[in-house]
Image (cartoon, rainbow, N blue to C red; front, side):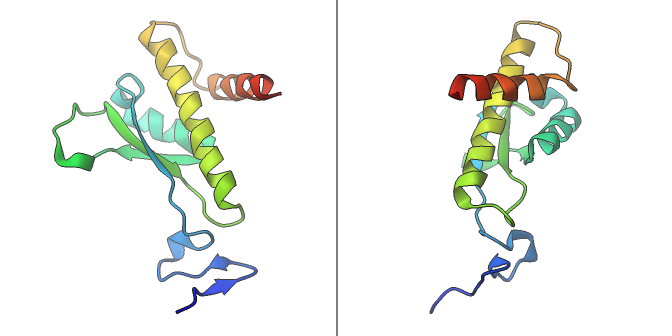
Length: 125
């Protein structure tokens, strides 16, 4: 059977949450310092265009807050490539902040995400 597709909405699914590409790109990442404050992590991820939740994969016991799943928040209005790149960039920012926290450096949670994104952009250019 062909997939239901709309030029305006993308792929049509039975779940409106995944309308568009239907792609959920998820990266499991160990963030013991950021993960210790899940509320702050969720807020930070929202600013980066991704969502984070505690990882429960593999069935192995994990330290609470240490491993989180980071996924694209939106699926409508962008391509699959853009969504995967968004998750990759967000994970790089989160790891940058995690490294600073591990070195016990002060982190400005309002300015740091944009500073890290600017640094990524300057490295790419």
